[in-house]
Each structure stands twice: as C-alpha cells, then as structure tokens.
Amino acid sequence: MEVKDHETEEVDSRGEVSHSDGGVKEKRSVAEICRDHQISQTLYYRWRDRFLEAGKRGLANGASDDHAYGGEIEKLQQIIGKQAIQIEILKKTEELFGRRQRRWND
Image 1 (cartoon, one colour):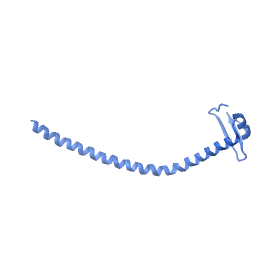
Image 2: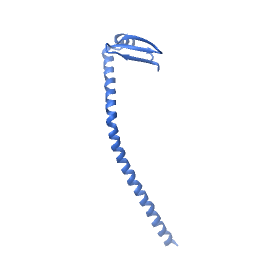
Image 3: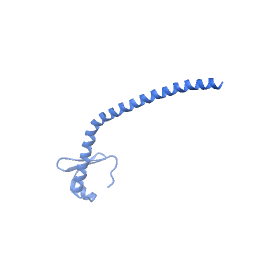
Image 4: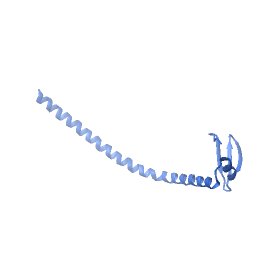
C-alpha cells in the first residue's frame, strides 16, 4: 500500500489504528494493518517501540544539545579571536618589514 502525503495513521491505547485518507477516517485493528502489509504484529510493535524511543531520545537530547553547542560556540569564538589578533600582527609585521626592505633596495 502506497502512503501518500495526506494520509496519516494514529494508534490509540486499545491498539486500534485510525487511518485518515484525505479527510475520511476509519478505524482498523493492528492485526488488519499487519495482514495488509504482510508483517507480524511482533514486528509492528517492535518498530513502534523503536520509533517512540527514538522520539523520546531526540526530544531529551535536544535540550542538552543547546548547552553542548553553547560551549563549542564559545570555544570557536576564542579561536577566531586569537586568529584575528595573529592576522593583525602579521599585517603590521609585513608593513614594517616591507618598508625596511624597500629602503634597503633604494
């Protein structure tokens, strides 16, 4: 069965699935859906559990990632600041030595 963008499925606490196809909603059991897709109910529930766990991890990690990124951003800003200073030093050095070389060549 091909799932189109406007099709959705929701599973309720009793294991019944609401399937919406363009505004028409129907309730089907997990057993029916598994039969239609030729998969076992065990596989269905394993996939569902993995999906839900991954969602929980993604949401939980999202909050802590902000702090990790904040530290990384601060570290990179320090590196950029040091590099900017080094560039200014090199420019001044080039100006100074560039002038002396021209005077010696004259």
